[in-house]
Image 1 (tube, rainbow, N blue to C red):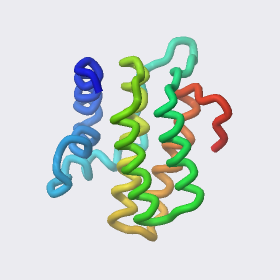
Image 2: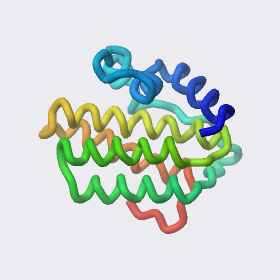
Image 3: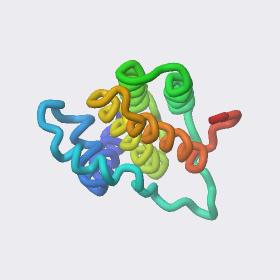
Image 4: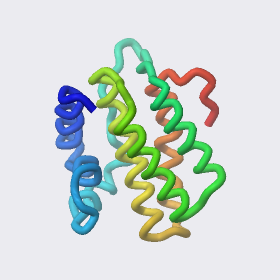
Length: 150
């Protein structure tokens, strides 16, 4: 991730209450900020788009989101949480989006990570799966991913 993208990531994370930043860059031992943010991640707003235009995707984003979508239909509980976190790490490492698209993606990433954390804490609870599903539903509203099927 280049320095401009890193600065954008940090700025967006701070704007959404520190939850994403805490998850991506800090230890899992003290995630009180993340837990406080979790209740609001479902409503995380993405940056405004011009005339309803969707952001372009790159191969890494399409690949990672397809893997999360497939896992959400085939896995449950901690297995889904693990796959989701692995793929979010893949997105963060490999996506090369412009700064506005990158900022829009962080609203989705926040929801995915919140859902994964919820599943790790309560693998049988539907709340974590619902959070991941919401992120997957929001993704094609914000991003142009040719052939995307929920």
